[in-house]
Length: 215
Ligand code: GDP
Image (cartoon, rainbow, N blue to C red; front, side, top):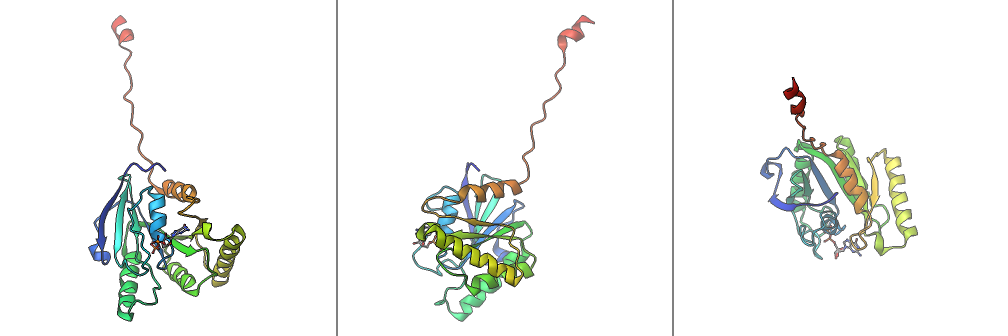
């Protein structure tokens, strides 16, 4: 997908504060520090659309970005940050679950998983919750440049194996690296395939003036 425009629309605390929109929406979620902002910047071919940060658990807002004036990319707050107070964690659960279950134009959720780590129950539990809510989701294994291909394959394989054990059925799974740019193509191609086809301009029938004149 060629990026013609990528604009920040706004930050919302909860579903109620989200901007009105009937554009198809695709949301990205994962543990704090999983590489979500870096991935969003990779997908949108921007340097700083999403703010990357070394400080996990910082962004607690639902950020909306309009892409090519045809769809919205949503950056959800990272979950599972241990140092977050219990009440902040509770707010996260209420706000994020409210958005995910209540947003009518939400088409798909991308759940990011750190490919450096063995499967974490917290990530599996999040996938299980999405599945229980009948929300369509895919997995993206991030930071693949940080480990050997074998390790990435093993961790992704183990995660998918655990999904099977838990009865989870993600639509798809992708591997990507914000550093090497690996994985951008397939994710964007899939999003593009989900967008309504652009209407072709109708050509008005041409009238054969010469023939008409003859008669
Ligand atoms: P977020 O908290 O999930 O938004 O994560 P960030 O995108 O801010 O990334 C957290 C840290 O991981 C930052 O230091 C990034 O530079 C680094 N990072 C993110 N993605 C990658 C990647 O694909 N490869 C490498 N090597 N580092 C990454």
